[in-house]
Image 1 (tube, rainbow, N blue to C red):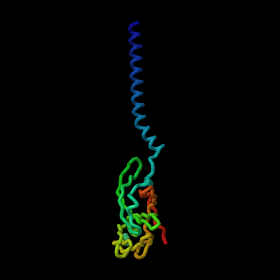
Image 2 (image 1 turned 60 degrees about the vertical axis):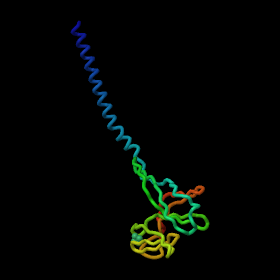
Image 3 (image 1 turned 135 degrees about the vertical axis):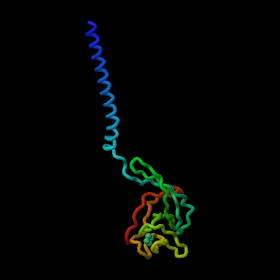
Image 4 (image 1 turned 180 degrees about the horizontal axis):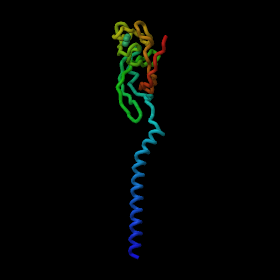
Length: 168
Ligand code: FES
């Protein structure tokens, strides 16, 4: 009788250990495969930078005098969020509307600046000139300056996406 009981007990214990080993393997397999399935089924958000960013007080701008304003914007790339510094050339018009130009020349991407003497934007790389409304005056630039979407909330100027300048 004791031999039969010890065999049954040994068999039960063996079954328990085998079940425990299978359970541990199942847990390991699940912990490795579930994140992969989650990644495949719910892909990360595409690169996005469509949030509105506050850049400053619009009441401090003088009409028709471009001012370079800097701001930080968060860029979402998958699960990675990075903060990037950027600038815009902002022009307030006499009717209190605002235009904000991207900081790079539309020829090869150099940084341009406002030339007080010429009252035009000048790119020093290949001498493209842009009028205060962003249109090409002269030089190799193929299209007007790129523009940010703009929105004014109270005194705050907000910038949205950068849109490519239309070709004339
Ligand atoms: S990069 Fe501005 S003119 Fe060439």
